[in-house]
Image 1 (cartoon, rainbow, N blue to C red):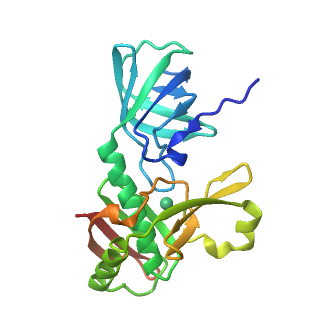
Image 2 (spheres, rainbow, N blue to C red):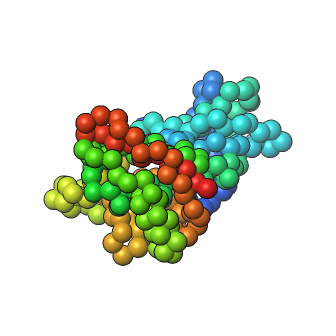
Amino acid sequence: MNKKITSEIFRDDPYKKECEAKILDFGDNWIILDQTVFYAEGGGQLGDTGLIKAGQEEIQIENTIKENTLIKHIFNSKFDFKIGDNVTCIIDWDRRYKLMKMHTSLHLLCSLVNAKVTGGSVGDGKGRLDFNLDFKPNKEELKDNLNDLIQGNHDITISWISTQELDKNPNLVKTMSVLPPRTNGTIRMVRIGDNIDYQPCGGTHVKNTSEIGLVEINKVENKGKLNKRVAISLV
Ligand SMILES: [Zn+2]
C-alpha cells in the first residue's frame, strides 16, 4: 500500500494563499488532500482556517491538524465529497498573516531573553512565551529592544541541517516544551538576520522583520520560581 502524504505548500511558501488539490480521504468532519496551503496546528501555532471549494460548493474550514504524514482540514457542515475530486483551498489570509507576524515576533523575543522557553502560544494578534528564568525581565526595556529589532529590517531565512548536526549542538534548541519536527532525518532551521536568532522551527514566518509593524508587551508575569511569562500583541 502506498503511504499517503499531504504535501505542505505552506512550508516552502508561507505567502501562498490558495492552491488546487485532490481529495485523498474524508470523514464526517474532516478532509485530507494531496497538498495544502493550510498550516496544521503545531509548535504552539494555531491551525489555519479558511475555505475549500469544489465546483459551486464551498465549506468553511474551522481548524487544521496534523496526523502523521497527513493533514486534516476540519469542518462542521454537510458536504458531498468524492475521493479524487479536485478542490481549491483558500486560507483566511488576514488571520494567517497575523499568525506569521506574531510567530516571528516571538523568535525575536526569544533572542532577547537569555533563558530556555518552557511554553508558549502563537495567536492571531497575541502570543506569549514562558521562560525558565528566576527574575522578571524589564517590560519597557524588552518592548524597546523588541521594536528596535523589528524595525531593523532583518531577513528571515530557512535552511536545513541533519538530525545528527542538531544532536551535536543541543543549544540550538531553545524550547524545552516543543521538540523540533524531524522530516526524513533533516531539521528545518529558521534564521533571523545574520545571528539574531537561529533555531529549529516548523512554523510560518514573515520574510522580513519590518513586516511586523510594532508590538506591545502586555504582561511580564511571575508564574513560578523558574517560570516568567511574557505576553505580547501586535499594535
Ligand atoms: Zn518559528
